[in-house]
Image (tube, rainbow, N blue to C red; front, side):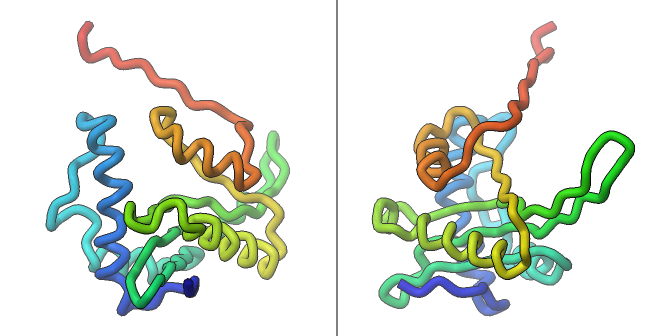
Length: 159
């Protein structure tokens, strides 16, 4: 297994790898998420995100095949009147192809994020997980994440 920083030539693979998690989200919340389609998270969108300051992509390659990716952002939150400053890495996307799940790909991608945090002297990682996604919740808990905040919603569409 090879985990490395993604390069522009990986944009197509990352776009394809997004299908796994996009399908999962679209099935759970079709009113929020679109099913994978040619216009869903295109390689051009990946390239644009790669070019933005603070954005980082890692890709996992197993037997010369793309197996998973993580997209994260290094964020520097300044001090305010009510909050202390904080540097963190926020994990936006995390996807492992179904054929490679349970083989350590996710753990290896998380190690890359932890190594990045250490190299950048950042002590906090954040990720949000949809409440229906028990597998992701379990994975991130095993990686050492814990709940520190909860978001709630209310659908007023039927009123």
